[in-house]
Image 1 (cartoon, rainbow, N blue to C red):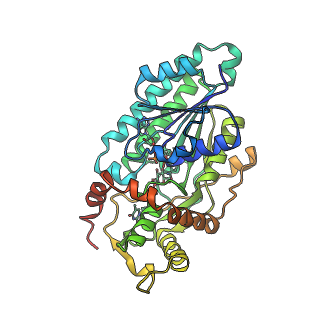
Image 2: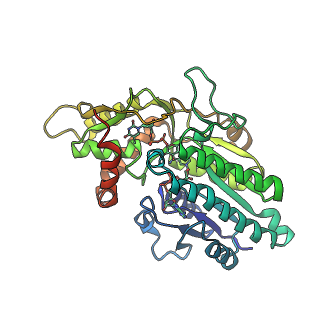
Length: 358
Ligand code: NAD
Ligand code: DAU
C-alpha cells in the first residue's frame, strides 16, 4: 500500500477545496477520480497543473473496471468519496442520475474498495480507510424547537437527493458491519465558500445580484440552514480520516443557524458596502419571493459535539467572517463565474425558475 489517497468528486465544490487544502498542507499524493459532470470543473484545480502530487482521472465511480485498475495501480491507503449529484432542486426535476451515482455508483465503489482491501496484507488492511462524505439532509426536517440532529437521530430523508444519500450511507454502514471494511461516514450541514457552483443559494444570489436579476427566495424565506465554511468542513474530514473511530459516523456543522432571508439580507448588505449599485438603491430591492420547493425541509441544525469532544474539531470561521471572504472571492473571480454560468447553466435556470411565479 502507498501513502496516496484516492479522492472522488475532487473537481466539484467541496472536493476541489479538499484537494487544494490537502496539497497545501502535505505532500501525500492524491488520485482524483471525477466524471466532470456540469458540477465538476478543472478550473478549480488550475493551480495544480504540472504538480506531480495530483493525478486527475476523468471517470465514473460506478465504472468498476476503472476503479479496480486505479486501486491496483496506485494502491492508496484511503478513499474519500465526495462524488455525488448534490443539488436538491435537480433531484426533484430528474431523480434518476441521483440514484445512478449516489446509490449504484457508491455501491460499485464500495465493492471495489472491499475487493482491494481484502487483498491487502494485515498491516495495510488495518490502516486502510473508506471515508464517505454525506449530508445532514438524511435526517429530514426539524421543527423550530427540536434539538439539533445527532448521530443517533433516525434517518427520514425527504427529497430524492436526501434519499439517495441515505441509501449510500446505509450501504457504507452495511459494508462495515458485514465485511468489516474500515469505513467512516461524515454528515455535514450546508457548506459555502469558493468554487461553489451558482445553482446553490449563496453563489446564485451573488451572481444574480451583480447581474441585476431577481434574487429568488423560495416560499416565505423562513427555512433554516446551518451554514459551515467549506475549509472547516475539509479540516473536519482530514481529522476524521486520521483519527476517527472505524465504523462510526460524525456530524459536522457550524452552529450557524440562519433563515434564508437572513442569509440573503446579509449578502445584499455586504454587496451594498463593497460594490454599491451604480444606479443607487440596495440589492435588497432585487429580492423576489417565488413558489416554494416541493417538500422543502423547514429546518436543519447539527449537533457536532461528538466530533468536537472526540477529535477536538472546532470551526475556525464565524458566519460573518466566512460570508465576507466568500463575497470577496466571487467578486475577484468574475471570470470563473462567467465560465460556469455559460452553456448548460442557462438551461437549468430557465427550467428551475421560469415557472416559479413571483
Ligand atoms: P458538487 O455537485 O459541487 O460536486 C460533485 C462532484 O462529483 C463534481 O465534480 C462531479 O463531476 C462529480 N461526480 C458526479 N457524479 C460522479 C460520478 N458518477 N463519478 C465521479 N464523479 C462524479 O458537490 P459538493 O457540493 O462539492 O458535494 C460533495 C459531497 O459532499 C457530496 O457527496 C454531497 O452530498 C456532500 N455534501 C455537500 C454539502 C454542501 O453543502 N454542498 C453538504 C454536506 C454534504
Ligand atoms: O444540508 C446539506 C445540503 O445543503 C447538501 O447535502 C446539499 O448538497 C446542498 O446543496 C445543500 O442543500 P440545500 O437544499 O439546503 O441548499 P441550496 O443552496 O439549494 O438551498 C439552501 C436554501 O435556500 C434552501 O432552503 C432552499 C433555498 N433556496 C435555494 C435556491 C437555489 C432559495 O430560497 N432560492 C433558491 O434559488
